[in-house]
Length: 369
Image (tube, rainbow, N blue to C red; front, top):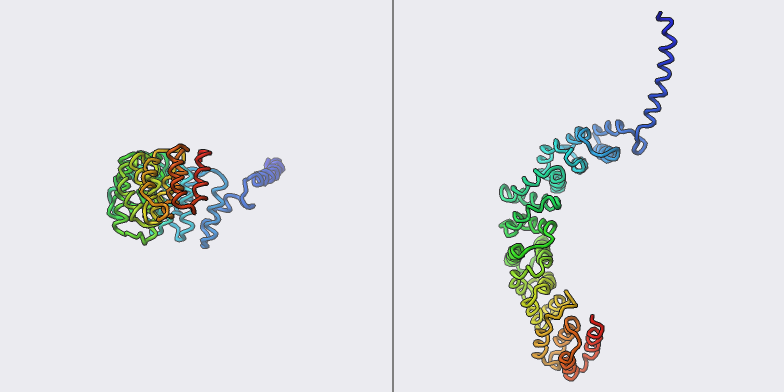
């Protein structure tokens, strides 16, 4: 009986070989290698080989719960680049990657700031519960961890909108790292800051300047500019920031003056008055910043009365520089009318050297510049 079956067994074995070979030929490849080949490289002692294997593996398919199994151990890899690559890959797994949360939380405490940042981003990508945890961590723990929590929320997008109030409450924190991270998160998440946010951000900015009047440190400059970005976005809601903006415009660090002027340019009434006084100032830096503020919205006419009042108080012949700035301002905020024409005629009579500036202003008025 066995002798009779032997030919059929051999035939079956021979037929199976091409089938297995065909299956291998159909297996997806990356750089000419199969998925199993790349997985073997994850155990290679060379970090660059492990990292290349990780980058290749994520190209085979979407990150799934099965993929997470061999990615999680690499979160604790000795090499920083391997750790970061594994963490970023897990973050793309979404809710499928929840089983990696414990390892990601450990990585969030990593001494390397880039590893920690990547872990924070991955955590907010894989679950809303992690977003809530980060929101709660804004108030507890070491300053470095609170700052990291704010940084993670900044990358959570719409899902972290409910953390805006908590972030707002910490923009005046004692620790500059926490202040900076909360400001950056607010800038990323709050598209239309309200008056309460604007007031608190303005106070934070004043504190920044009082701690370092010249803003010598680059991180202090970054925090201040982020605050100004938020206030500019707040528009008329930034009315509570009027006084801080005036202080910066007149006496603040040079890198911030134009930003403060642009905030004032979005505050109707008092902001316009502040800018018109600035363009008439004796300090060239203040004048230039004030002019930048008036240029925020060239179609508005609110500031014209204040600009004309300031111009009347200047002797064109005695102070040509200030007069020139005022004429430029008129070209930006006025429409052509008899009052404006008389003011420009007075300038030409007192300072004929400004004929080019006056001509340009009148041209702008004629075309509604």
